Image 1 (cartoon, rainbow, N blue to C red):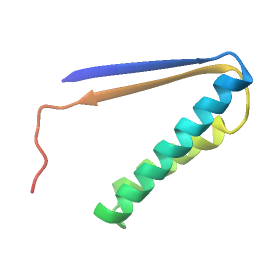
Image 2 (image 1 turned 90 degrees about the vertical axis):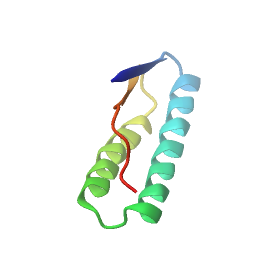
Image 3 (image 1 turned 135 degrees about the vertical axis):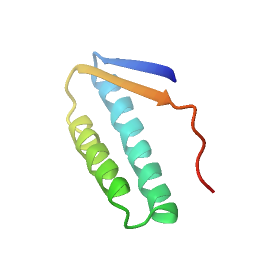
Length: 79
C-alpha cells in the first residue's frame, strides 16, 4: 500500500480562502462522481457526509492545518 500526504498550514485569510476553494471543488467533484457512478449506495452517502463536514469547517476563515492522506491499495476495481 502506498501513502501520499499533503499538509496545508493555514496562517492567513488568503490561506483559508485557498483551502475553502479546494474543499468546495473536492466536494463538488466527489458529489458529481457519486451521482454518475454510485448513486444511492450507502458508502457514497457516508463519504459525502464526511466531506461535507470538512468542507463546512473550511468555510470559517480560521487558522489551522489541513492534512490530506491518500492510501492506494494494490487491489483492482471489479468491472
